[in-house]
Length: 276
Length: 302
Image (tube, rainbow over all chains, first blue to last red):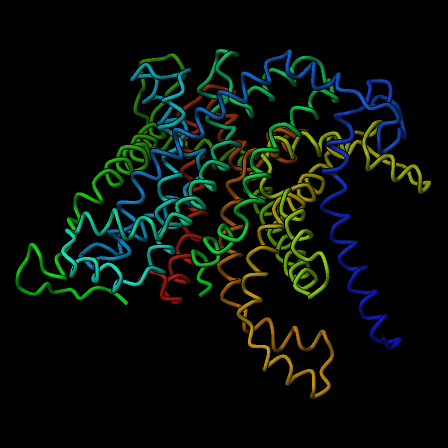
């Protein structure tokens, strides 16, 4: 290798190193703090990594209800994901495959409703939930989350529907399938990866929702992770160790899902964002 | 390829029989009307009343809440902060994200794993990121203070100082959101015609000039869509500021979402809170219009 080539490789790695340092250092600090003893956390200029690794912070966090919050978040996020996918797979198919009057308007409406700040919708939705006596119950959150999860899912799935050639469906129809059979047996299997990517995106968004959760939920046993960590674990003194343990635990499921679905998620976003 | 508009004969078994559009759309349309259109209308009505928590009597007052907001210096402070916050975060994410994508796009060993790790801040909950950065900024126990001390610099409580709090939350939000821009730009860079960039390089153009004149024009549509996405997300972002400063100290990080929330659920003044929310829609509306124009220009609505 020539000197110039070595210099070039070297500067490439240096650039990557700097980039990674910026993004990874805070993450590593979060995880390492969660394994530190109180003595090591509450000391000025303490070490980056714990000298004595301990699980005590996790014990404290789980004793304060972290496990329960994890279950609650899972119930709410999975329910929202299932309902949004069911609704969106139908409407997204319609706006991707059929040309009808008002189609463009629906597409625009789907974009616009993703842009409306939740802070504008929260008061009226809170009042509606209060009238329906649904406050402090999971359905109130699931229903509220549909406001943003359905439009996102429709828009996301559209890119996957558009990538399925209409001829495949027509071939199935020629073979005697009804519209419904062709949809279920031919189209759906082809967009399973898209459904998975869309589902994961909805799950991750709902998993971290904070504003509705802290407003609608009042019983600590019903808190989802974001609400519980803020309203409960954070309130028990600023126990940084336990708080970092909770932050680590709540970051694990989205990170893992993302790692598994990285490629598909990217293609979902890319085509939703106009990259062919 | 779209299906033809007109269906030929033999309706039930014809190859071009139309799917029952209305039934496919119905669940989505009903939910959107019930969860977005109706609440928006109801919210607008609430903003025209004096309406408080636990009070059944909402009295119609016309635009009094709006007038009260427009005469309140805090409201204008929120407008200004919302602008500073949005512009700061979006510019930071776009610049760092574009440069980061160029760096990660180079063919080197471990590229895939580097890309995955870089994306974690974006996918992790905003609450976790907010808590993490609160500790990072802690003047005594935080990592940033530690680093400054080891370099012989003095540090400050960035989040509780009115002069540094906005910059501190902006930096944290840039850290959290930039991976999305990297992800989009990486996808965009795959579409760049290498013949053009190679030709420029052979003509002796510097790396910077190649990027400026050969790469950026080709990824401009992706850059614009990404910018619109993150502008709206940032303007509407609640979680990190709520966790890190809750709009303080002395409203120095108060932006629309935290302000609306504080009015509605802190002061329990629904009328004022929804009025502030509706006013923030004006800003969102401008961005939304740009969004629709951009998408229809790209043919995404056809």
